[in-house]
Length: 334
Image 1 (tube, rainbow, N blue to C red):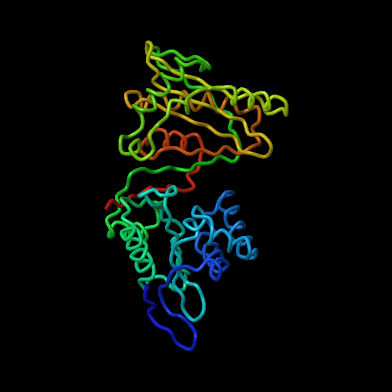
Image 2: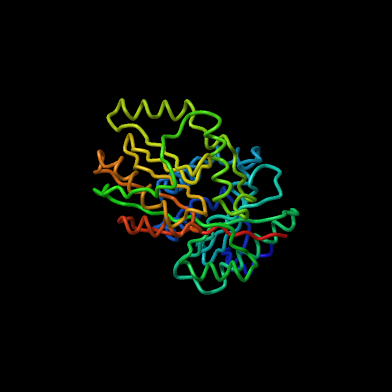
């Protein structure tokens, strides 16, 4: 990879990232570029980067001997006047995979609009093509118009999206009635309910999303792990989770789970509605979930929900939730 310029021992332009030299600067750049977007896991990853940048022997071992970590630490930086002003991380989704992931595309605020982001992306795409990668995926905020425009111009296609919503306190709501054609009951920890819940998720999830992230029936099994969590919740006074299903005959047409937060965690709600019943079941089920959580009303509720289910997102907002952000998954295919 050629450097654009080199003057008085200072590099100007694009070069491969050198973890031993660049990790602290990359961490600073990520913090500047994504200060408003870093959640708890993002802050934890940032602290890990800073820790690695200070522990040079461990970092050297990771780069030299660990293929998994050397992939994780691969990418490109843009340097001007001795300062890192741009970075992109590009790595395989798993060791030896031909599918790649781009993350942490960041440009310092004072250097945006100069083509640095495109230069970094061109380098990342070139690296993946060199290794005969078949695809590259990345995430972008839906309201980040410049980044979205860049990825569109590089022929990335949107494959899915997730809305992140939150409510500071659990409100007192009236439970809306369900239509008479359906029945509500508790989810049972058996294989039949697991299979029916899996069938519902397959019907509710777009095929483009399932192609990227295939659904597994085990994900919809209410097994011993969740029962142990329920016992823990009751032990610390946070109550049990509520897991309901809605049926029209034998078919599952909706599921809703309300999880009280424990040990400082937020409450969570998960909702799936069959496309045939969207616009009808969202409010009855979400109001029921909020009613269950009202006993622990001082805690915040955090929700992640697919953007293709607009009826649910609008119902969340109607019930007082605020949409913090929408993240889109985009994909480039060779």
